[in-house]
Length: 471
Image (cartoon, rainbow, N blue to C red; front, side, top):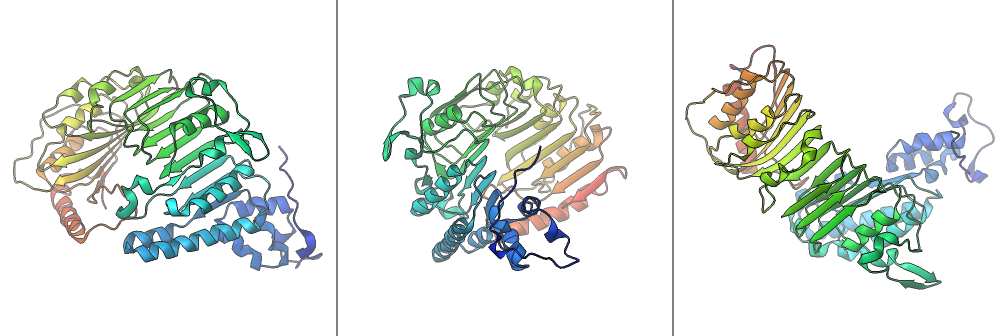
């Protein structure tokens, strides 16, 4: 397929080049493709190389406004004035780039910064800019940089519903029809959503009707990510014609029930508080789900026929002490990777989790991410009396190792039963669920002690053919 040629403003282009500057002799469209592989700031810096490069970066079809360094600074400082200052800098940066940029269409448009409701006008302008250029991959990640706003959904940017309204003429819009017929209606809106392939909205308040609109009016939509929304209690992602492959609904704290029926769906990540209904998901092979935090339990998960077709399973578990439900887990003959997030209490044994491993005869990688609700160590004797050979498990990763007898007991299970184990990774760092927020000093001190415990407890026990990695 021949790439679409890029028309560059020639008034700054020289007629001759330096003999050894072969790169500048390449066609404009080739140079623009090369610049698209760089970060936005790196691509813009090439404009100072020579006049040949002044306008090239302005025609890249990917705009990724990543500001990770500033986000980390905000997470460390937690100062309101600094938040305002960095926020203004970010808004000015995005605005200045958009004023100069000349691409007619965009493959990617990504905003990633701690911006809340006060930035509504600026963020909406950026959203309109991307939609007007028939963007294919759209991401607005307005995640909070620190704890002060992380749990304040009322401060989130609100997705403008008017962008989805029918256009009845110049300056005239009307809302879409009622929910009963929304999936049979294709409204004329200000923007053409038919090119959208991936949509990610994090810390953006969006309505159920808006989500349904995207599903109905984006025929190429393969990926939908929604984080941190409220006031949506029930949601249906259903349709025989959906091409959706990846769906992620997380930190939606009011979400009580989700129904999914999507024949092309391969990856699902969801946290619900009561009911998850899965129908017609024959392609689903990757599932992430939270169990045990409310009414949605492991018992309900066991009812899904799709469990047997999974290749990757990530479970968030809570309070399984005294429970025998994991022993009834059905066989997962295709499962290659199992990840478990679990909050432990004191010296609670982790051996119950091995039932899931025994239900996965072809498992190759196991990851445990352990959170500490109550920190304690005891000198109880470590038991190692379960024998069940795992003939395919090669990598075990234990995050949140603290040095409890329960931890040693759990690791010992793998040493005794994994026939082809190649790598055992021990990570004493506690699980962090708010990115970038610095770990408190007392937790850092605990991690240092845990690392010393891991070396003392495990190095003498791990056979030489197993690579032991203590982070």
